[in-house]
Amino acid sequence: MDKFILCLANSYKHGGRCIAGVEVDLNCGVLSVKRTQYGIPIWIRPISHSIAGEVPMCEARGIDVLSVVKVCGVSYAGQGSHSEDYYYQRLELIQLLNPSDSFLKKFIDSWHTTIFGNRGRALTPEAFEDGDYSVMLIRTVGSEIYLDMRYTPKPRIKFAHNGNTYDLPITDPVFLDRLNRDASLYHSDYGVLYIVLSLGVLHGGWHSKLAASIITPSVNNIREKVSVRVSAPTYTRMNHSQPTQSNSISTADKLITQIKPFSYTQKTLVEQTRKSNIIVPNTTKNTSYRSKENQPMKPSASSNSGGCYIATSIYGSYDCPEVWTLRRFRDETLLHSYVGRLFVKVYYIISPKLVKYFGRYLLFRYVFKPLLDRLVCKLNHKGYQSTSYVDK
Image (cartoon, rainbow, N blue to C red; front, side, top):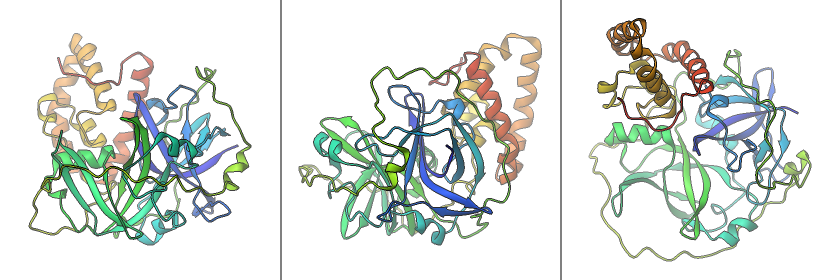
């Protein structure tokens, strides 16, 4: 069985990716949200057969937040709070959308009055195990993004939802990279933001609530209909290894549409004993920022010394798994031959100009990203790792 999702969360997990989205039907290119009998959008989180369930990097190539994705060969694997989990055989990128506010409103969870059953920042392990969902999308207005300086600097978002105020850490890797490059994004009174909320792993006796994705609805160049099938690399996993820990499939695939909503056990968290002024001042109100696909992907400052200009522009950071792979290939292979060194030299001459004059255009991304994705995938198969790397 195959399913279609609109990807709304795509973060790093155990050297791979954690991808999740709302299930949709496609009818002549028009998306319609699939819901449970209670009207809650149905979430799907593709998982592998590893212990952590991460999606290997090669299988997640080209998939971004707001991508329409075909999840092929699914079988239900949900348990407890992770009712969204599905094993899969292959992921196929269909098309990247650029939706409006009215479009994204269809995907929000308006049934649950609180976030994962309480008004606090985290859940107890008991409440987590008794729950039946671990991800949701909400719409906010007037949010505040600030830098928490109490321990180590940590970006957080404060927002109101159904009369309650929440203050949660941001784990969206794309948005975090933007914050690193543009401190003006730290301010209050944002316009409309959509936040994908998820539950983190157990840490310090709690399961933290996380802002896994921050999405701004678009007002220009809106794309809400699947009109063109984007050719993208797909990777079929053959001979799946069995889970190293028992993961029983407790229900049929259709169970997800019949599941009864559950409110997590109410538990008041201990009030924070320390408070500090941690908002980065910004005298100019800026109620919106560019959406991910319209934001120019400029190389970070560190790219000036490393030189992977096009890759940094495409992937948004000099320090991310894809660019780490390419940097290893450069240092361990290309620089050890005359032809390779010549290629690197020419690349360093041409690529900064390409990024400078064309990097801001979507066509630049559409042309180069599939090529880089294929190259990185091949390099990973040849043994080039995608872990953190320091240039030689």
